[in-house]
Length: 480
Image 1 (tube, rainbow, N blue to C red):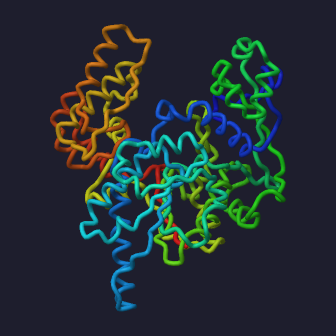
Image 2: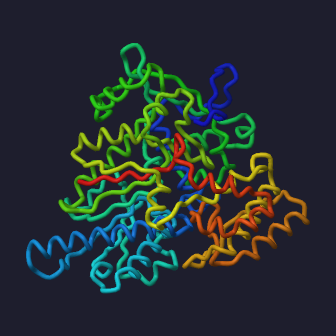
Image 3: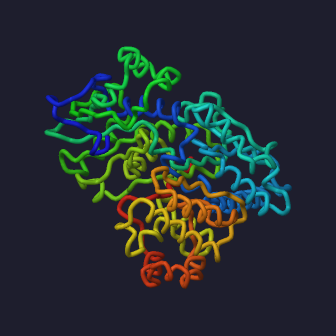
């Protein structure tokens, strides 16, 4: 699904391992295998803005505390009674490593000095991967909150175990891009969608002695059997073609068709069907006066960007496929479902508003270095660790997190030792992640040390003011 994995020369195709199916079906199939084989090693392949950092969680906690306080005050005034004491159920859909929950609850408890909100909270970790769910619950910083945390193994598209109107707040952090998504376009008055057929490279095929057994295990998503074969997810080559959409199995036909009319013909766009289903469930489970749903994900609501045939519709990370979130279409579907779309804003603006200053990610800072794009391998790793070391003189986290930074195994002993020493010297309450949020004060206070390793102060200052990119991380807030 990345450009490198799509193969269109049928005469040169290697070994077939499946038939043509819609892209959303293969996405779900491959991702099920990916999480089964690699679910415990996610951070080796990609990181989220809350995998180790705390600032998104703290922003959510502060926002939630304020909203609940205002709602309680309004209820007291209306009913002339004491503050409401009912349970406050919070869901986190796709709970990752549990860090968002841990930091949220810790900060909420610290803010709630009078004990009017935190004691009422029940925080439910929701994920359809049971192993990942238990790993999230085992996060050590959740131990102090164990009486407030529950787990639910379920698909967010079908939350049958949750009663109507019982949930007060829902968080989705980088989940929507993982849900089933079709790629659709308008052509000659018809709507077509992308179909894919998987093949395995000849080199990988040659390493598999029991080919029929492998194909059967792949078809059945038999993770236990597949774990006995050589790694293969990055070695899949995809044929693609376009077929007329069968609308019988696709919901919101009218809304999708109206949206596609806003774009040029033959421009492929993501249609995030899994997101639509999750919003429908959110509408059902959210209480009448619920605070609402917040999703944070990579995508765009800009029709000009969506109308660009060269836009990135999807990406691949260690064999797992994620799709750009089409916030513009999601907004139309949400309104169709009766949800109120309060705002779609850049994620860093949401976090920055909570901190009271401009913020940028560590990756944003690294991109301002004049040599960042020219550096490769160990030199790039060295720059990252030097940058973190410089920032750690002004950055202090309220949590202790040993940064996870894999040192390549193919380095010379001297280079490997140098990087390991740099890594070990980093403080445990410093920058916790390579995509952690940094405040303007933290960056500018470290200017002298950053300039010493090649950064330019004016480029850094400019980067703090840069608006969201054409495709960026956004906060989508919905209310029932």
